[in-house]
Length: 330
Ligand code: ADP
Image 1 (tube, rainbow, N blue to C red):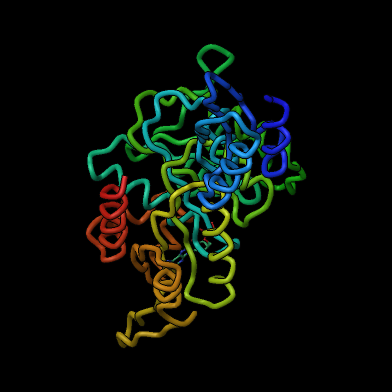
Image 2 (tube, helix red, strand yellow):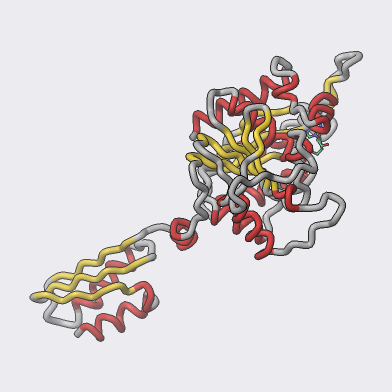
């Protein structure tokens, strides 16, 4: 009888999905794993099994009704000790201001009385050491095994850039890059951290997907300029996170507009509101817009991010507002 039931089940499911078949006094109890329930199919299945004869009732139990990717994620996350919440700052393409946003957002979050860490995972262009003013300084280690995070402006940080010679193009590929990122993330003595911000590598390739699966992320923030071409890539980024079950916290429009210092004229250099419209179309939160401004660029390059250097400027207030919206969602 058990084999006959199994053969019927195999018409709908694979062997891995059949966890157990129990028959007791004409009652059949089947446990299936890693499959989503489809009620129409379940009824057909029950009818076919009942037709075998001598069966009074068929019960089918579905366990773990999550996606396979979700399950895989839960099983083998990297162990990042002491960190409560992790958010990714990502972009579909490079040069849209992802790192500038990650750094200033991390500072704005720490201004909200949170203990914040920033992890620079941008293997293609790690700019956090420059933006936080420790370019060229190697990380220190007290025990020869683990790393001490850098501490600047009340923010803890670590960057993959500390392992890379800035003048050498990076030729790490998948496994090597992921291995280095894992080591830096898990071997850094973060201490007690409320929120870690990860400055992701731009794009949606294998390394980005692996990072989104292996790091237990509580959400992702997508940075885009208002331009169509950047937005197409931003949509790809949103879809990547959704595929691996990472919640989208919202979209930030960077380089949103430019106000002329002399005449006050506003110019929408890369267009305007593209990210807001895309957020609406995709049913995602629009977190806010950051204008294109000389001071934002200059302070980044000088290693004193704008949120620290000019805390009362409208730009810093915009980052603070976005930080509050993110904390509300976490
Ligand atoms: P990404 O991480 O997306 O490659 P970056 O954050 O490194 O981009 O920014 C690229 C360049 O643009 C940097 O020189 C940075 O200072 C500048 N930049 C970023 N956002 C702004 C802004 N809102 N206003 C002016 N310059 C900006």
